[in-house]
Length: 346
Image (cartoon, rainbow, N blue to C red; front, side, top):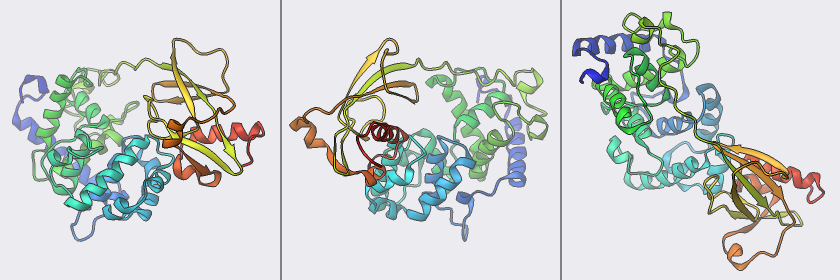
């Protein structure tokens, strides 16, 4: 492993593996995607849970997961659904490109069968290094390590690693370490143990160090670096955008068109609009909304004649069906603003 990994020898590695595995088996939470029948671990359910967990906590994910699985219980059920319905069932989780990628990959996997290795899963839409490794290990016992925010925090503290972990070369040090820990027949439990430890004990703030199976060997605990490891990632600069929207209504319908040329909310349907990046907040606007690093200042203007190019991409949508096309809270804000100003009645 080398000195950079923080491991002194293979004996230390094996002790860490044994202690973590024993802790996990004694303390693991009962979660819906961990319920298996006849020793069959469903890769589809593991995949869905891992994608959902990338953006929120376990407690928040469970109701979304259960509703999603109830409607799409198998990979083929998800593949055969319409994209609009998939987006509607994803509503509230955000990052709607992930739902689209789930749908696209489900269609591929229905044809090919579920890939069993991280390398093959990585070829599919939405399967990044973390998701592909998580599914391959948790469902098919491939001895590969996973590296999410929880694991980065646990490994950085246990081995005293001051790394710019968002940098590719330095992140690889952590990935190699995670791979070494997972290089066992119990790799699925090892990976879940690392993630569980980060989620329940080695938390970002006020970690419960007395309950940690690695407390006797934790470098951060010995050297009083718990609050400084892992290295904080520099925050991305906030981008300011002015978004002019021109909602057009007729009877109980609104005209929506996909947002094609945008760094945010791409391909989601909104009223006809134009975007401009600004150096400072505009003086006049009607609504404000934030999407990751983007601060959106929204102005609502009267509609203008739709050009043939716009008409090619857009469509008239019944107001009662809007959430099937675009389930975002932002479009709800826009519609409520229009209702308040007497343009429609919801």
